[in-house]
Image (cartoon, rainbow, N blue to C red; front, top):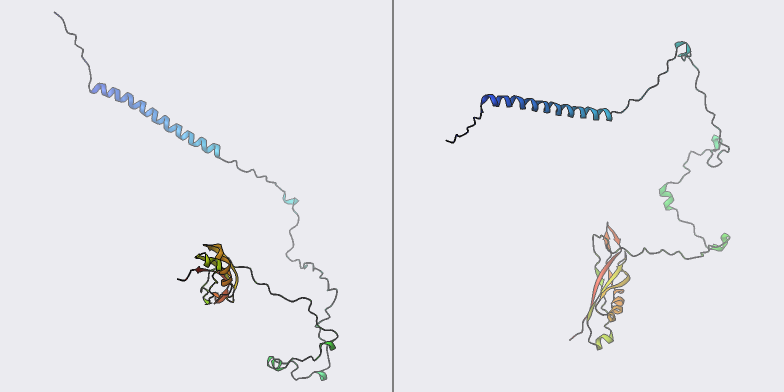
Length: 242
């Protein structure tokens, strides 16, 4: 006969309780050590980062070494600073005393109305004045430079006089057509100061377009209730008539 070997496994409340007590103690020890290490690291960082307090030096003086206090009944005034007198007295606009008999109670200064009614004296001969006025050089008022490409305006210039360009003879013979864009510098009076070709279909039309552009007249551009200089782009079309 073959005997079967049987093993009895004891597993129940008593065994679980023993395991629970053992592992609970281990877990508690690990948690306590972890918390203590964290607290130790925190205080170590605080200790290392703490700045040293400044050292103050104190001197002890005896009462006998102190001098007498200042008197509250001292009537001495502060020393006055000496101000030097001007080296030279003014000689212009100094009033001079006169006797009362010579003082006139009447008005001696003309009013604005009286001064405006007085006519200017007319000099008949400049040579009698001991020398004439000589003008060495004419005074010229230089115009301002060209305006920038973009100028903000409240009112754009409007052409009041337009001149048609002359069709070049060579272009007519060659049956050529095209458009020339001319940029015109319009001054504060509305007159062209300069004309520049910015785009052209054929160079043969450029000079005729520039000559015509310089004969245009505009109303001046307005900004802040005043005229301003601006650039104006005008297309000049050269087209043959049928």
